[in-house]
Amino acid sequence: MTDPGSGEKIALQRKAKGKRPYYFSNPDVDKLLSMVMALTGELAVARDRIDTLERVASAKGLFSSDDIEAFELDEEALEARAERHKTMLREVNRIIVGEIEDLQNAGEEDYSSVVDQVENDD
Amino acid sequence: MSVSYKEQKPHAVLPQTNHDELSRQHFVRSFKEHIVDALHPGLKLAYEKRGKPKFVAQHRREPATIQEVGEAMKPDQHYQAWSSLLRTSQEMMWSSAQIPVERAINQGAALVPDQALLGSLTLDPTLKIPSYHTAVDIHCQPGGYHTEYVENDVAQGAIYDRAVYIYAMGQMGLYNADMGDSTVAWLKQSHPDFNPGRILDMGCSVGHSTLPYSNGYPTAEVHAIDVAAPMLRYAHTRASSMGNAVHFSQQNAECTQFEAGSFDLVVSHILLHETSSAAIKNVINECYRLLKPGGWMLHVETPPYEGMEPFDTFIFDWDSENNNEPFWRKSHQLDLEALAEGAGFTHKPLQIMVPSAFQETQRSNTFQGGDFGGGGVWFVYGCQK
Image (cartoon, rainbow over all chains, first blue to last red; front, side, top):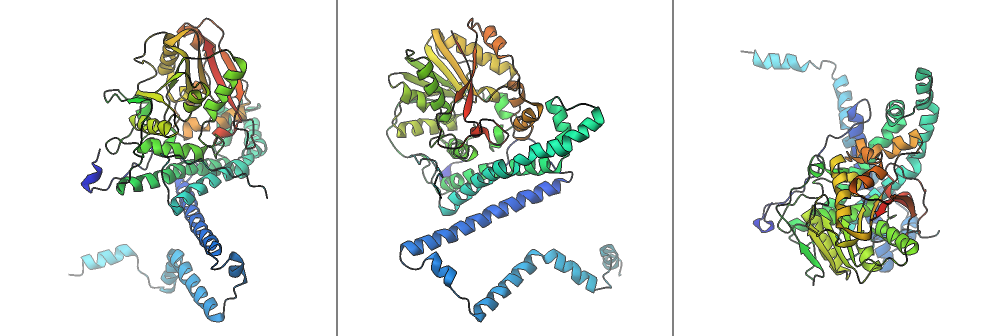
């Protein structure tokens, strides 16, 4: 047990004791599904926050969700958003985009041959 | 659109959540509802159209046991996805209930209010936590019922109170009281002259099922025991905040310190399936010892497997292998008559389905994996001494 006044951060046990069952023939699928659901949850939390924002704004007479629906984006705003989407997609798909770069660099050497080279260039 | 969303009734000790923490909990509840409403129906279809025909082709007969339905279902992709998501929802549920509690502890915020306490609390730091609680964390609550992080800790109780509500998707009532409420309603209807003067609730956890007895029999002296100190501390403040005087003490239901023949009514709620073969016998023996002649023991549970279709049994049995409920299966297959007889009871024990007292939500009238509170009925096993 920890004294809460000690300044040491208390971390609750976050994994239940007991072997965790996996269901798909490849457990990585279970892990990925769990991550997708956690991300879906976080997305729902973010959407709820936006929903609250709209409702508070409306209750305070600032703007309503109808104002949001009726809002017309000008070209500059549309372009800024498209740019942000592009960055986000490149980040999410970084590993796949990276593979394309590898393919483009036709002369990519096998990693072990590089190790071999730097170890034995004396 | 009719509004029927029922949120847990806040009470003085329920953990405080900020906007996003609460939203995260609401999402888990929606996720669980989605599993029940949208994914669960696919299991029977997958069984009828894929799993069973394959099994029949191979064995020239239909699956007859939990294990045989499992053989047909475990390789099925829909079963795998459903199981994987159900397990994940359970993990997310605990996590979403832990986050605000962990934050409060680290911010030095009091998890329970400073208030006048009713009844009493007696802890026994020397009590050994039984191995059926320490071997694995039951129903996947990290740390189980008993783990303590700080002095006078209530964290596990605070997490449990909130998680039960999310788990049952609100179907256990605004205070999670449905098991107690339903049993009290049944008792009052079937035995209107029974007026217990002394009541004991075994394995009370946060006392959510205890309070209905205290409310239903206001002149009774109500005791409640559990092995886990964080549950009892939380339960004591929770009961006090609602104006209930209950005497909580840290004791194992297998062997209590109470005098023989000192109770008119001994109850438990989903306790038996969280024990063991030896412990369940001890608990029933102890009930017999504690009861006055004419007194009742009543244990609220989910229904035994006997008479269920093999497919339904397999699905209902999901928790035993997949949700850290190691005694779930065996406890649903016991000879309950022999158990009561072995303890000394001479009357034939009751084994009845009691309708839920909380009728505000639509009920399936069947229990299914991941929809524990949704049956609309509770199984009551009991006996009069």
